[in-house]
Length: 414
Picture: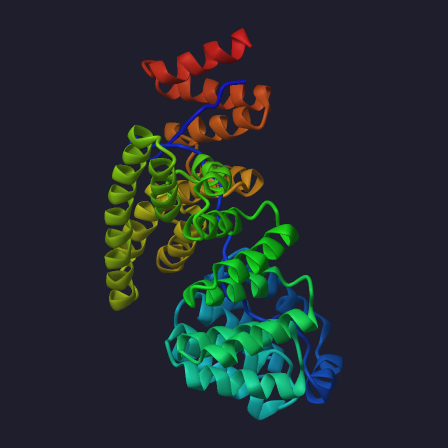
């Protein structure tokens, strides 16, 4: 079946792209110590259920609901460490790092044996560029609860500080602790590449890619390392699939263009280099919008504009992060919800996208664009009857809409 394309509220055509994986940091989700165990045993069943629901809301990125539920739980036990830990995670997701820090410190004051809280505090310091404070937290966490992920984050902090030997040691310790930690191999490869040791870099990056062969970012890194090590033919083999899957990837277009020029395919190579130049300008616009949004904080349109620009660049996972912050400010702005659904589809989560469209239509069933996009999502996963039903609603709302009539005709022909 041919692909169908969604539209935004303003009629913008968006191609469905795949999310690019990365070597990013994560928040730790772990258990508490003796104090926390005692609290859990004494927590009323209703409060425990609300806490579980709050955690589910957080996982669904419904931060407003998660915080409201957390406030309700606080009425039962204001000193509940799990409650403050969850709030810390929510505030981190919202970019309110000072509030997150306050909640995490409360956890430590109540239960110094709470696993994961120092790790998360370290991640927030790392995000703020406070690498030495981050290292302090990671060392404290590692002394109590050793893990490969903590070694990994220590390596990142050392690398940011320019202490290469310690960074290498930390990444090697992460691998020794967990030989399947793909991110550690990739970070170690980057360190060796920075030192010009391309053979070592390739050895480690290929091990990381072997562990996660479908990771597009790892494919890019291996391809780029092949080019820098003087093997443009192998570079093309890895970089071409990245550009096909993620056409907005600036570095992949740039390095593929250079590799093709080196192989004598100058026309195609120059076209890719010109495209990379445009993408680099787009990246600059994105960073300017990101800085502006962070500076304004609670300005709804700043986060929406950042999300739309990230969507345009084919970076749906990052777009969703920006939209989540906009959603926290205006929870039921319907055009925003439509953008979120499109980004979910681009990110490969059609089930979540369909649920989002359905939620919008429960609030306003006259939105033809949303019915249209719902039909696109159904059609692209092979659910033709549901697509036909959705597009029939568009015809009733917009009899003059020739695009939906063409899509319906295409369905009937296949």
